[in-house]
Image 1 (cartoon, helix red, strand yellow):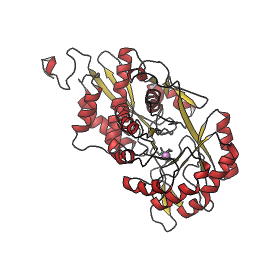
Image 2 (tube, helix red, strand yellow):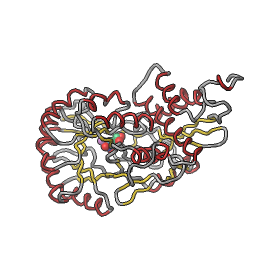
Image 3 (spheres, helix red, strand yellow):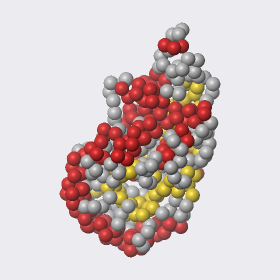
Length: 418
Ligand code: EZ4
Ligand code: CO
């Protein structure tokens, strides 16, 4: 610190209230969550989510060991400058651990700004551009009849959009079809479980499943499907063509898209709407997907892609190319991140849909929130900030438990993509 407040580290307004504490809370109320708590000298608390499924402790260390010391004494009002400082100042930039850490800080600073000004964050982002945020949830079954029952249950809860996944004949456990909704698709243990995957069997089976779902629900319900990165561009193009009549809302993650250019082949052969991006961490990973119009929806998550500030930047680029935002939001994205995402959704013109898996009761008790989900739509509520209060005493009763997503191998034993 320097005696001259005008030149204090981290800049900021002279005499401004500074960040006095940065704490990381790792808890496992049913599943693991990493939560950042920033406290200003005046006692204003900002919450951020830093949960990275299966790599939770790496983010906790990044925050505790490398970021927290940089935040103490900084002006919490300088959200963008802090983002730039953590991104450009680290030299080693991007990647899930870094960007999740920056995301948590960014969300927490928006929360503080909301509380200091007495406004819900969506008001600070320009105010509501819609009355409520469309959500989709998951339906799944080992076979088609079980899937259709699951779809019916989701419709009875009022959802207008549903992701449909099924088992594949001849395969055991399949992505998206799990007995444990709270921990889907991760399991506790020191070493991940292994599943067998057969893309040919999946491709033979899934067009009939999607057609049966459409036949069952009629034309209006929005149907989504997640291929979870397991196809080649050629396979994806063929699948897209075969399911065009189903009128999917989107077909998600057909390829890993590490090479963005490969999507052009898929795009040239099918009009099925494509959604990609839950594992992307910056705008740079979806830049050409957007500007080359290779996708219809970008799925970057407020936690894993650098917080509210960076998600808004991705949305702004996407808006120029009529690509819409459909943020990631399964149960490994905590209620803190969901809150932040819904503030963005309510205030961002090219937002389309929010994934929402829901949480078991204990998660709602640890993370009390002003957001609500009614008839398949989310609203952030009007509490100042992002609208989250964490019950730290309750969280402390659920210590971290090592847990991982399963890994998937082909029938010949070689690894396949998640
Ligand atoms: O499998 O977040 O679209 N949603 C998804 C998720 C992911 C998990 C991985 O941690 O693909 O359910
Ligand atoms: Co997905």
